[in-house]
Length: 342
Image (cartoon, helix red, strand yellow):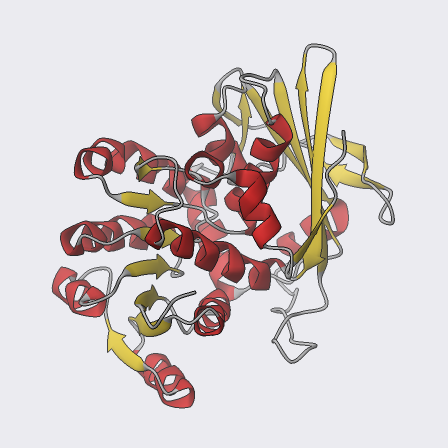
């Protein structure tokens, strides 16, 4: 448990940030809320009885003030192409661990590229993409690998009942599309490939009760960076149910609406992971409710494990690299249902 330790949350008043703040409090931590919009920040701090510290990614001194005295920082403020590097720099100056919930492929690549050597030399802990996309799939793929040291391919299929994107998701997606010049991306042959053609459509055999569903193939998410960063798998493919992809692409799809006391939406998900090596195959799956809400226990559990020394490496690391994946997934049992299969 947090035992009263302070954790700074940058972008705390955003949709995911509010879930993170609430979950930190449930775990016994004291959130210090931060962000650039002083009006939203003050409203959140007042309502929750928390300390608010305005800060901007463009103002290093304000970030230093926001992180002062904190044991760790969780960055929930997208687009991460803009916020990740400045907040990481502030965390390095403060000497505290950094965790973010980025789903932007290029921003995550930037974090690994820019900070790996510095973080390792400093013994710092930097965990990008500790979220539904990038974190959960990586943990499942790592758990499915078990004692395999290599695999030929990994497939991560997202069975979402629908997808009502937040304003942050839309803003981050726009930045990624701009950086790619409108191209799509996939991870194949040991590298990210940018392509102009249309992605394939196929049927994915999700386990029951969802069952087979039509998916967009090569609907590449953050797992295409986090998984091959530490697992020697030359092909990592991700898939998305067509209904969710359609919702995401429709500018008129509304933001998620709460349906329960925790503020979760009615959205359900099933993440089905398959790794293959030679003629062998291993699988793992997890299901739950609301991809944004489940990001909070992922990020907070990561902070808790870093602060309590339950890590396997230092530097910039993805979820399955720095944590014991099966144990981490079991710790999420109040929030996800695991379905490991041989």
